[in-house]
Image (cartoon, rainbow, N blue to C red; front, top):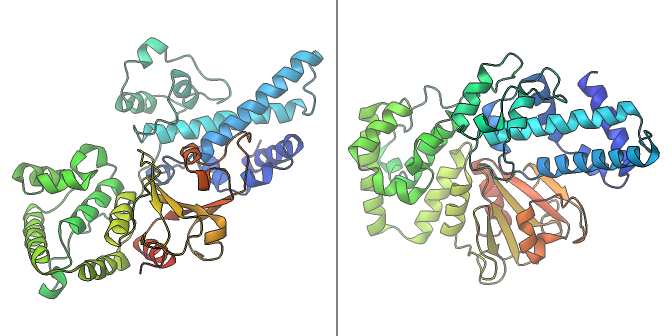
Length: 403
């Protein structure tokens, strides 16, 4: 059956079972991702953009719960699945397998993606001709000895495996730093800017895991003057060694002069200039920028590995949010969570997903499960905006009334 027909049948099926809920699912871009997965056209950049996203987990839980419900009907009624016919039931099983495959791909390319734990069955399903009937090629004992690299190598040798393609990188043949920049321009290019460009280059080349100091600025700041680290960066990221050394020297000089002469206003102006021309940015850049602009961490809600809550209100840096709180989700592309009443029609142009108000009894939860600890965002109508570029971040800063 063609994917479009399968998708339409799934929408019809879920509408029969969950008439009030299904359209919120089907309006999402999730089906585009699933289509790429089904056709074998997934790229690394697509996977990176959805690491940490809870929607696929919620969707898989919904499908599996529906299948379990239908299986129970079949048992009670002696073969009759109740609301659904056999074609609908098999299509549910197909989308459950396809969604699990997509989550497996994401987890394979991000070892920190703990929301979905890869199993031997996942790998057996990725190499099956019919994804609803996983092979038995890989045994549990063999699987438990495998690293992520081992898993990818094992998959690549299997006939029906659909590999993930390397995204064409906008950084290819692009220098990490424009060394023809004028002296007046150099005063805005310090270690933070060099760190951001090197980190983004590593992400686009799929090599971030090879350079741990590029994951945390403080580690980078400690090692960037080490000649062995500079050599490793130049070789690993295909950079001109002489040019990188020159960039490091410029950064050290700029930061030294800035420490002596700059004011907070100068630093903010400098940051805005960098953001205007920045391409894809990371959640680290977003968090560092919010700190620079005087937006404070929330005093009541604790920062976790996944979320950083911020206070919003008089004296907190972000003045215009009635709810008093917003959250940055620390995915590779930062997600900005805020009450819908505060943000509606104010951030047009940013990729947005809206989540309706729910109750503590709603299943599945539907949004990032870590939000359950934030009273103001746990169950109310919220919006999630993706901060993909420097321009997106400037828009958010304006929305927060700090720029």
